[in-house]
Image (cartoon, rainbow, N blue to C red; front, side, top):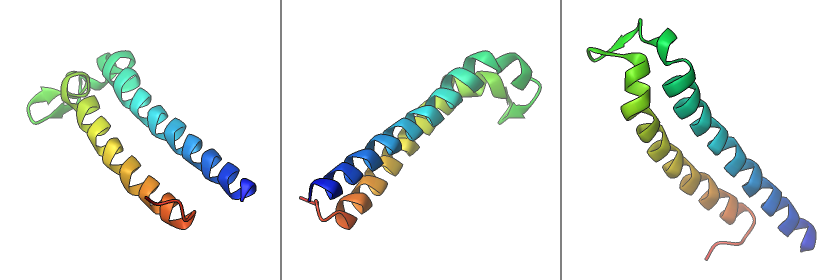
Length: 83
């Protein structure tokens, strides 16, 4: 039982770190650090760097929140820890 709980905890922490890394790359990397380089590409009439800084990081955060809920629900069922 303790080993299963440790595996569950490790998996959930890796998931959180992975999803936060994706969000950090999308918001800080594309929205701030690479914004100048991405401004040459246009998305719906706006420069891509501007789009990531204003809308892209928020949309990616919402998608990651849904992904977290879906994956954690699956992990809960696999670990027999669902509520």
